[in-house]
Length: 246
Image (cartoon, rainbow, N blue to C red; front, side, top):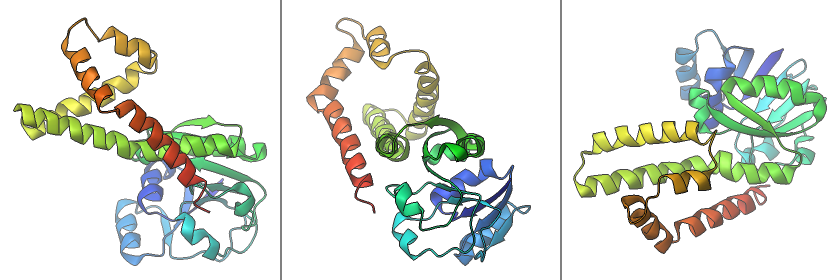
C-alpha cells in the first residue's frame, strides 16, 4: 500500500509520526514546513506537488476551504479525508475508487487519537489499518454521526486544554507553583483516561463525592457556573459549524 498525504500542517503533521511506518509520500507546498518535515523524517519523500494520484491511497489533510481549489489527476486507489464538514458527495470531485471521511484529533501526536470514520465499506479495512497507526478507530454508520463525533474528537481537545489551564489557574490562585500544578494536571488527565475505559462517568463522579466534602463543594460551584450546560452547547455549536463548513 502506497500512501499520499496531502497537507502536513497541524493535523496532517500530527498524524505523520504514526503514518511514517507506511510507504508514504507527503505533499506540502509551504517551503519552510517542507524543510522542517525533511529534518524530522529524513526517510520520507516530501514533495511540493503531485501530478498523478493513481496507485495511491490519498489522505486529504488540507483546510476545508482549500478543497474547492484542489486539482488532482488520475484515479486514487482510495481517498481518506480528515476535512471537517466536507461531505463524501463533495469528495467525489477527486477521482478515487472509494471514499472515507474521518476525524482524528491532535492526540495523534502521541499515537492516541480517537478517530471516527465512515464511508464506503470497500475502503473500511484499509482506512482502519492506516488510521490505527495514530490511535483508536471507531466506525460510525452515517455522516451525521461523524459530524457529531467531530465535535468531541476534533474540537473538544481545545476545550479540555481550557479546563486544564483553568485548573492550573485555580491551583496557582490557592498558592501552588505553576509548574507543579501542570504536573498534577497531566497525571490527572492521563489517569482519568484509563479509568473511564472501565467506569461510567456518572458512577465515577459519585464514587469520589463524599457527603459535605471537598468534591461536592467544587461540583456545586461548577453547576452554579452552568459548566455542564456550556459543554452541551459547545458540542452542539461545533456540530452545527461542521455542517456549515462546505
